[in-house]
Image 1: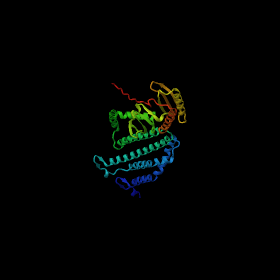
Image 2 (image 1 turned 90 degrees about the horizontal axis):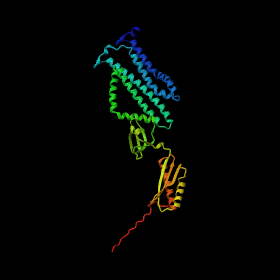
Image 3 (image 1 turned 30 degrees about the horizontal axis):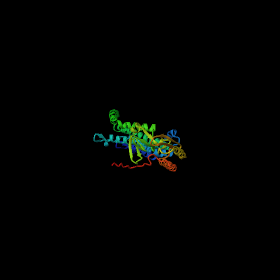
Length: 364
């Protein structure tokens, strides 16, 4: 038996092949259990930060990529214990087959590791999204999406550099030096885009508005549907869809209608100068009574001015932060009641009755 196991085939003994095959087979069989166990250990660190984390969902999300990474790692380490057969040590273009296999193994290992990190980020983002949903502020959800994408990009860049370093043997110090010079040139060329990116951070942390808010920026009024890294998308009151650079959302005067505490209604009546003072007094008293209702919080009615052409009656009232449709309904009811009051008091608006007389001059 020992003689059979000690036979050399392709620069390695049969014993070596069996040991490596046994280790790889064993790992493939128990990788699921080992991954679950390691995931449970990793879960304890996660639970120390977030108390109400679901262990089952964490294990389901992390165990599979963790098991794949462990299987690939152990398999590669085991295969490295074997001597590379000299018969296969041939050149492929400018590289040997051994170098190509080494590059391929490193590439697969790094990709599996990066995939594991990305799944962990997905789980953390999932937990933060659940916590953000418990609040009424939608900015928290936008922040979770932003930082999730940000860290995924960063991990992707690190993974790319690891592949260049460990798979292809590229000196990344030279690459980083070149990237710093190129990055400075790109930063100058993309100055406006960088300003919009910085403005997006200001929006996220300063929170002048959130998704779903009705805002007025420049001459446009609409509902914020999405806050991106470069721009904010708004559905206008004309049902059009506009994209505003974040820099303009920060630098210009922005009116957030959703933050209002009241809605104001106003009416200016120009009463005919032929109206006697008693009717005007009764009109003002009647309008004050009309504007004293449950859906109007405060009101102000007064004779604001007296001119040669009209008596000016100013009506101002404030409702709560109701919807536009509800406010328009209140405004319509108030206007109709004031109109009926004027009819009952026989109060006319200035210029309501205009007599036009035609005269003819006869010359003899």
